[in-house]
Length: 195
Image 1 (cartoon, one colour):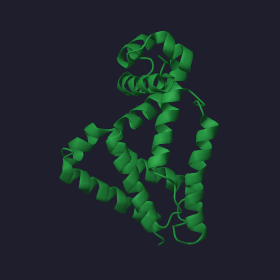
Image 2 (cartoon, rainbow, N blue to C red; image 1 turned 90 degrees about the horizontal axis):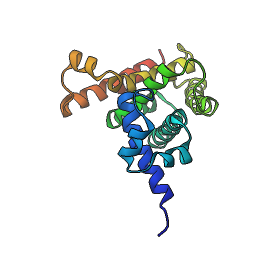
Image 3 (cartoon, rainbow, N blue to C red; image 1 turned 180 degrees about the horizontal axis):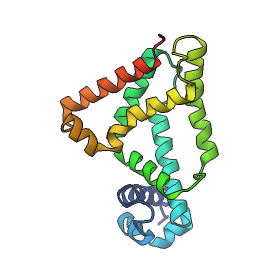
């Protein structure tokens, strides 16, 4: 019987996402992740390397998922609002991404794994904003890199600090979720609006 290498890698990544999001890379062990994945820990070392390399692989995988689910588009004021709404939805459905990003910020003092590749990806977002500004469809009052970052912050902060969102706006039921999303979309549009 052939070994399902890809299936094993997927199980390891799923277990690692859960553990790293919950406890961070320094709060869990390769042994615990292997147990959750139902594999021998040597498989993790063979496929991914050490724990930091596994954490990097998890981030790479999760960021690829969000990039595919919420693609960069040419930005007009309406489109930047919808982009913010889609990013908000994604973060609500996948709160582990915000947790992983916060853990990354805590454990790496300077450059993070895959930083150059990720810088290019974020650069595409900035270029979409800059193109909207060149076409005078988006405000030029904010630099394109700052505007792109602010839109992502609007979209992702709800899931990054759900306890604060709950204390300020109430419990996240379907009605409140719709209200929050509408606020994110409207705030992004207002940020991007040409005066």
